[in-house]
Image 1 (cartoon, rainbow, N blue to C red):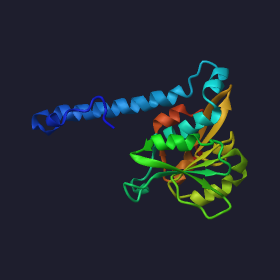
Image 2 (cartoon, rainbow, N blue to C red; image 1 turned 90 degrees about the vertical axis):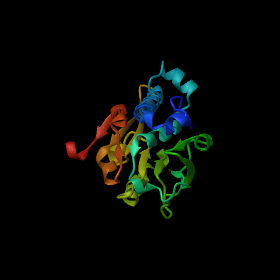
Image 3 (cartoon, rainbow, N blue to C red; image 1 turned 135 degrees about the vertical axis):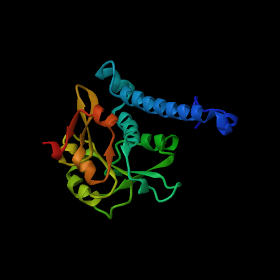
Image 4 (cartoon, helix red, strand yellow; image 1 turned 90 degrees about the horizontal axis):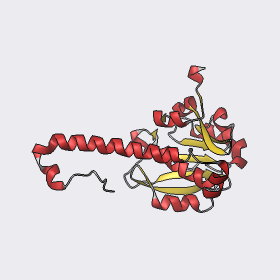
Length: 212
């Protein structure tokens, strides 16, 4: 995708414009990060709970947030075996998103990788993925799933108030009719994941065993 501030190719090839190129690239990166932050915040700043529920059904908002979470998490460099490997989001248990997440995945990319949504049965052999969403009905399987992904760079997102407190890296919950999330920082570190400061600032609560 071409950014509005991309320079023409003839300027980029001109050695006299190297400083301008470096400045423009830095500026573009800053604008990109700011744009993501504005989009991210827009899900939390709503005129009223009633309007939010009417305009943005709960699991459409959560589907959008799953994609945004990935932009604010640093995975190890070797997380993809090839440039063509898709970013895989696994849904543990019943899929509450309907077809919305899959339709969203067809339009979006994460770090230039296409997105693939798969189903995951916690009672079967664990499937490789980059993010796993644990539905409310499967919260009792959380401990088992966390033991399976421990040490692997897989972001675990739970759909319950107690998810992050129990070890999920991110847990959705509702505060005064608005969707919020909490973070378990120490659990994320155990999976070699770095949650950026941008994401931490948006969290409603942070659990960290190292700072208790």
